[in-house]
Amino acid sequence: MADSRVSLLTSFFHAEKLQAWFMALAEQAAWIEFAVLVACTVLAWLLTSLLRRVTGAEDEKSILFGRKILDGVLFPLVLLCLGYAARAMLATSLPITVFTVAMPVMVALVVIRLGVKVLQVAFKDAPLVRALERTISWLVWLGLVLWLTGLLPMILAELDAIHWRVGASTMSVRTLIEGTLTAGLVLIVALWISSAIETRLLRSAVGNDLSLRKAVSNATRAVLVFVGLLVALTAVGIDLTALSVLGGAIGVGVGFGLQKLAASYVSGFVILAERSVRIGDSVRVDGFEGRITDINARYTVVRALTGRESIVPNEIFISSRIENLSLADSRVMLSTVVSVGYDSDVDLVLRLLSEAASQQTRVLKDPDPVPSVNLTNFGVDGLEFTVNFWVIDPENGQQNIRSLVNMAILKSLREHGIQIPYPQRVVHLHSAAAAAPHGGIE
Image (cartoon, rainbow, N blue to C red; front, side, top):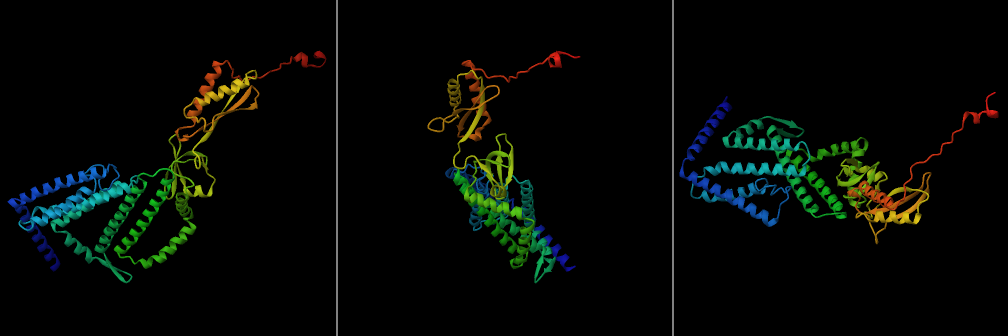
């Protein structure tokens, strides 16, 4: 009964306080605070724009600047710093009214923009990102409303009264919520640092350097998230010494049920470290041929020229035979077979086929391997020639360049009157009379 009376008195006190705040907004000092707040907003926008131009941060993945000035974390952060400075200066000569509400709103904006931008950069393709962004926004604005209305201390006190014992320690709903929020903040900061390191490492990396920097980036993110997870568990109140039993159970699970998953993760770091396959390589794996577009910790993405993408576990690249078409040399040899009649001039055919292949811009010429033509078979219908030619850009297509070579060969042969033979078969017919014994039927 006494607690309910205290709660009613507290609510009445805060209601009176809120009413007095609304009345203070009509005073001249409040308008001065409004003017100073607008000036701080304009100044924060100008400073952020200046820093954006000086640093040249035009990347939409930037957490500080974002796609636009108002989209990043830097603008509300600069506004918060200017707001604190303006509030300290005004407090010496004026009663603070507007900034009492403006400062918590600025803090809420910083927290929301930080959480949203970090999640967008770290998990851009995850389907739960949008739900997490909305959850962060609702929780922050709810906490702000409860703080301004004075209900937050009352709710926290009620939550603190709901407690229970876990082993030798006592936990309550309040400590659990505060620990969860602290854990989320620590993980967001860890993801922010790892995303900044990844962006810095991969900004100008190409070829072999790209794979190595990708390995360093993945390892850095794993370490930071692991450390953040340990700090988060400590903030929740979980004794880390109790994780030894859990670690043993996880080790047994990895040894039996998760060995494939663990092998893929380990193989991913091995691939990135030794660079046996790299981003941009043309490979043929498990009957699928394409170009490696991304190497993650667990899987590698191989994109075919048709647009199809194959998700290949990294374990396959370690334990199976993989054809890397561009490991030491990006040049790839293609071939096509042509048949001509037996009465054709062989020397002329050899020259025409070589010239037709050499006319294509993508086909390598001297001093690179020049197109070669060989008489490879005496076919049933004609002489068979094999034309071998090299290209240095197989990622731009192999079927299209082979088609261009074939069209040039066909045009050249027709211009010089060299025939491409049709399939020919000789059929012998025997009459019934000739097949019968003694020339007839008795």
